[in-house]
Amino acid sequence: MSSIPPEDTIPEGDDLIAAEYVLGVLPAEERRAVARRIETDKPFAQLVARWQHHFDPLNEHFAEASAPHYLKSRIDHRLFGTEETQAGIPLWGSVIFWRGLAFAALALAVIGFGRDLIEFPTTEPAPQLIASMAADGSPVRTMAIFDDQTRKLKITVVAGDIPQDRSLELWLIAGNEAPVSLGLLKSPQVTAFDLPQPVAAKLRDGTTLAISVEPIGGSPSGAPTGAVVAAGTVRGI
Amino acid sequence: MTPEGISELISRVSLRDRAAFDALYASTSAKLFGVCLRVLGNRTEAEDALQDIYVKIWNKADRFAVADTSPISWLVAIARNHCIDVLRARKLVAAELDQAADVVEPSPNPEQSAVAKGEAQRIYDCLDQLEAARAEAVRAAYLNGDSYEALASRYKVPLNTMRTWLRRSLMKLKECLEG
Image (cartoon, rainbow over all chains, first blue to last red; front, side, top):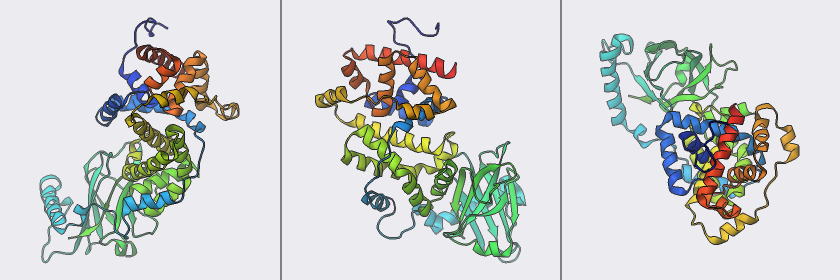
């Protein structure tokens, strides 16, 4: 074909580098450089993904082999340590950090969202719970604030868009219980959820809030079916 | 387990759900360990690699959200890429090049190939359109993690010639796959 150069020249181009990365033939240094590029260059990353997709069917040739039992406990040890500690980010446990975030949220409310996000306390401040939700590699960043008196949970999308052809669904996960749907995010600014008492009771320090991508109208099964684009732990302030 | 089931487990792992991580490991570790054994060809290294791979899966589970691929393909790609990184970090010794020449080439299993349907069949059809030796080089690179250096040694051609060969094969493959 005309796009293939004559026999004696090496064909060039990003697409071929992407293919070579997927095949795995590149020497160490070049391979590392390409791996770094995938992290920062989205069009290039898409070329890599496309080649990977072409070659995926060959994966059937990797025969399954049982891994020795001790490997899983070594993995757990590396990830979670020996004690039953919470595998969380230390920063998230810091009261100072959360107080700081609360002030930031207040400032944000004043600047960007007026009184939509936070109703200013009139008499004495009601107990509030707050959660910042995000996920590595996902553009969506959201913040949740719960007012115990009104039982309103307000979610604001700080960054990222609500996709046109999908719905974003909010979930509450208390301990080891199955996720409970709280409803769909409607507005890119603030969506308020009225939580019934049994659900509100579950919303406390340590509860996880998460947002998943679902078909329009929400998960058909009542459990999250799509990718989780943001998640965070609730903290009292 | 169904792809939907594995997708759900990965999503739950991104929420730091350890029970989901256990279930994900139980249902996918045999496949990923198979990848490690095939590419690294060494049990001790494969065991080390599998641990690193699941640590990566735990840490990168949220990225599956933005990856437009089947969950098992996503997991195998993490495993394969990690093993190839390990392989490339090794000093390439002469013994290994000799060993590479002796690897019995896995011809595509006719039974499996016949089962592969539609889109999945395409890569096999397109590989069949390449000269046999060149198709074999592509397969050996993907499945065994052969480097340009190892391939050049096996086919007894200079490195640049090997690169020209393979790149031309890739261009023909692309024309066939996307044409």
